[in-house]
Length: 374
Image (cartoon, rainbow, N blue to C red; front, side, top):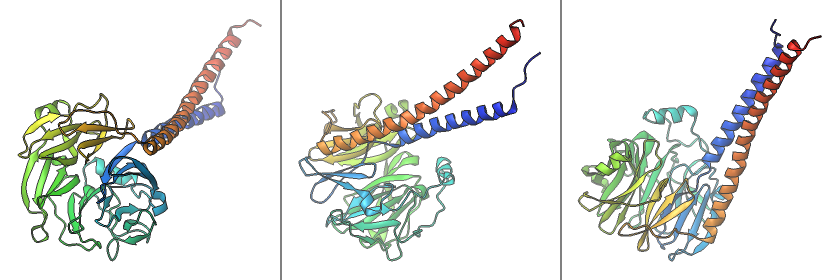
């Protein structure tokens, strides 16, 4: 006759199994969330800024490391969206925590528009114009603006006019240097990402339309469609890299980061001024590029997942990686944090293993007790 399992044992096993799985999921998720270099920016002085998590690493115009800016001092809990510099060196960024809920993420995954208000939820959240060295900040806009989701910023240093892609609302916006709207929001985009002004035309990585959209940047004609560049050549389709996210103007060429469906593992593609495909940059296998930036006479490409910044010649040839003492220090800190969370995840696996082994031992002991003669 089979022995009965005590209900308390069943409950304990289920609880331990759930705890083990939860620890593994949490540890693995936290580890993957600690990425490497993300956005790359320059200021009017030609200084290079590399964003790694909540840090901005400043380098001079020759690429020598200067200092590390902790954005936490500016009340930036999570870098949500991009940053950009005004002509006087002030930086425009979003302050506050990440307000996105599970529902927001599900809507974005389903390609549905963000319905959240642009009104800040607190006096310290939303877009602010700040001075990095003194941590002084002023509200951007009379009543404040808070996208509460992914957005990208370009500031035209000739006028300090601010162009923003409101990515999850599928809109393009234009503001004065003080944050006052200069034109009505422009629709017709689908998850627009990086943008820049070139020859009074605004070029936008129109991600889910698989193109670089070209519109008029002038306020009186703002958003008028002027054309588009098809940035998905046959080789990009074969690689399933069809979602443009970041762009750069390099000489008379356009450089485009075309990502895969999960917005990762992209490829850098080069097009001429007429939009004709030129070549694909030969990044290392497993590369996960994010930002593309012309710096000095080279192009820098950040790799979020592999802790690297690639240096590429203007012709598209891969050079040695960009490196600096400050960058390496922050990346080593990130690697240490990842390993710590990975260990938490492995402890969950170990706990699950011990639960299984315990059940097997108990079952074997019960079997042996039934078969052993008195």
